[in-house]
Image 1 (cartoon, rainbow, N blue to C red):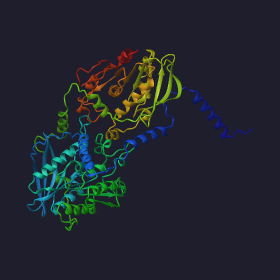
Image 2: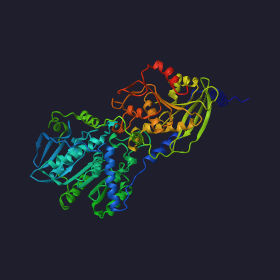
Image 3: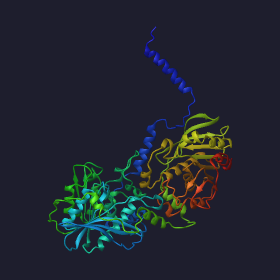
Image 4: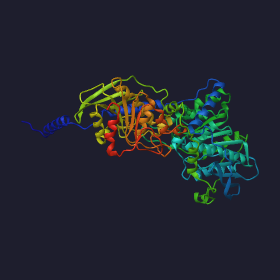
Length: 628
């Protein structure tokens, strides 16, 4: 007899596993292998984030593409049409005199009750001098950081008027306001301001910035004819290099709605051709491959236009920076192209910067400046008031990113059955957009009745949340004779991932993905279930409404606790530019299906509106559904 300890452990393990297998599990998971989810999400991320290199076929085609690109990017930024160019009403709130330059704290109006602020460095003398706009990016203390100060002081000492505008990060997605909206518009008005200064030669204006400042430079290279030479630093790459298939992201200012659906960073800067551009990249950040991968496509544009000598790349060993060597290269570039003096001395002189608190003492905003509140209010004021629009459905589909969606052939796969509260429950997957299978639970009323009316239930926490927290509602619908399909639409439940900002840049909002997955869920229930309804719980009520725009076959839409409209402050789901066309009540009135929307706020006359406490929702909603 050999009763070794290991044999006893193995016996107990076998008993434990047997009990585990035989014990009913409250487990709604369908994708048992987490790698399946990761593969799907990574493949989708790769497709939507794929590089879009610029292509040159002929001068005529490139010029047409450049004009098209300008309009598309302005639209993505919410700057189509551009805001009214209100009088600048400039203010100099403080000055400091130095031996060989002068610093002014300046303010200039960009919107009716909004002033942009900046730091203007002027050479000694009367000029007119070339001007250089210096967007500053994410330096600590912004334009007051020593590196930014040093750049501007050096430019002034070398005979340039240097202006660094304070960057602002303002986002209000639904009105079409993202961080680059105001930064770009403020920079465009900064060029207006430079032109207004007698010290500046408006025919000789350059632009340079690093990182986020390089990003601002990129937009101006595309949108502004007044810039005659540019030096974007440690920024330009394909967008995919700064996105992540996981959940970490760069600053929100990188995410302009729908931009990656129409262009990529190299093409935006290539549109500057044939004007002179110097690109500075490094080995220690996302620009590490720029000389081999992005730059050749830009060179081809310049070559095609007959100006190969006007574009260069300086690639340095090191990290994300705008150091002295880089600044001297920038100086030599501007000497060559803005001063027509390639032999002028580019060596940076001795610089002494000011502490931020000393600069802060140079003055406060002009009276009447409303800041961020004024920016948001202005863009809200541009929202059109329209009761109906014959193109509204197409506009909503465009916002949702439903154009040219690539579907896989519908395939339903069973992953096993179980009992839930006495009803038969199937774990299934069904195919949706090209890369995805959607995990779902399909519950049958009584005997498995394929012809029973169908209802799709979507919830912020996915199918597990529905059964764990709203099981009473699911049971009531089953007892009323309905087949209940509960999918984990993207990016919920098993498919959960925080891709809000990636989705913004792709022009494929999370609500668009989810609405499409609901459309495919309708395919699962039909044609046997002639009537298919959608119930959106919590914040998914708006997604249920949008799903009915995507799929007119949906017979009814219900939302148990709808919440606010976007005009009244709703933020989720993120739907950039929605209010340029409509709010949720207008979308609801567009639909021909039955509506049951509980407790919507912020709009009168919402069709299908009811006002019930949560204690009554289960009974009333389950009884209301068509086919109940």
